Amino acid sequence: MMMDTVLSMAGYTGDRVPVMQKRMIEAMETIPGVQYVGLVDQPPLHDSWSPSNVFTDQTTDLRPANAAAEVIQYNISPDYFHAAGTALLAGRSFTWHDDKNSPRVAIINPEFARRLFGSVPNAMGKYFKMPDGTRIQVAGIVEDGKYTNIAEIPHPAVFLPILQSPSSSMFLVVRSQRDPQQLAAAMKTALHDLDPGLPSYIQTWNKKLDSALFPSRAATLSLGVLGVMGAMLALTGIFGMAAYSVSKRLKELGIRIALGARREEIIRAALGRAFKLLAFGSVAGLFLGILASRILAFIVYLGTPRDPLVLAGVVLVMSLLGLLATWIPAQRALRVDPLRLLREE
Image (cartoon, rainbow, N blue to C red):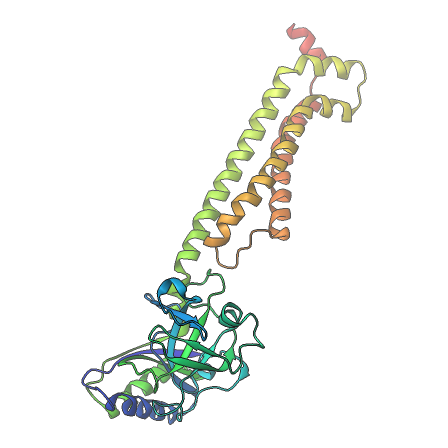
């Protein structure tokens, strides 16, 4: 379980900011049950974020048009990746020795490595440039994540040490197995002991994810309701078409029965057109569904443009609904009484 705490370093400036931030981390680490603690200037899936341009080490003209990639930048503390549950794939993580007096270093994700260096193995130890011309060496590589929204495509990201890129507004990330309410109370007490005037807001990571997932969940629910309504309309349409087809051919069906036609022949004669339209509609719907799924993949979380299980399931369900809609008219066709029809004539 992760706790996300919004911290505003009001009243702290200059060298006092990193000192207080380190004290906050140490205070959180003393709370029983806390496993890892980290700081980040903006957590993943935050409401607002601003991309940054990066350049290859060989680039001398640092205008935006010459940027090698547009990346998401995070300023983090040591142990942030442990607190966030992000795996280190290569290299090392940051330490408190990565300060303003040390060589500039960064940790990147695989997408960043592919964009600037061609592959992940080629990135380790290489340099890139920031818009101000600062050369930064790649010290480590962490797994790709979701940075702006749940449904995003892989995006390049770079992580910088907070002591080399200080920020006065930070998010405290705490990983623990304790009860959320008990942990939140202990965190508030620890922060109050450090500075009673330090503003903070604490929430669980699951609650933050609920906000991030709300648009996808709302879209999924809306699409589900529309799907049910579409299925009901299809069921009604197929039933109406099959019933109309049978009603217009009752005399013919009565003659066929009187002449000894078999059960299969009666159903084929009564509902042949309905079955053909059902098959044609299923094929057309499958094709249109594949086209529409490209759009739905951007709306529904974990949706993919081509999901064989979903497509096969939809075709199967609609086919069963079509057969159900034709069942009552089929039973009516089989119960036709030729003597009654002749008396009516």
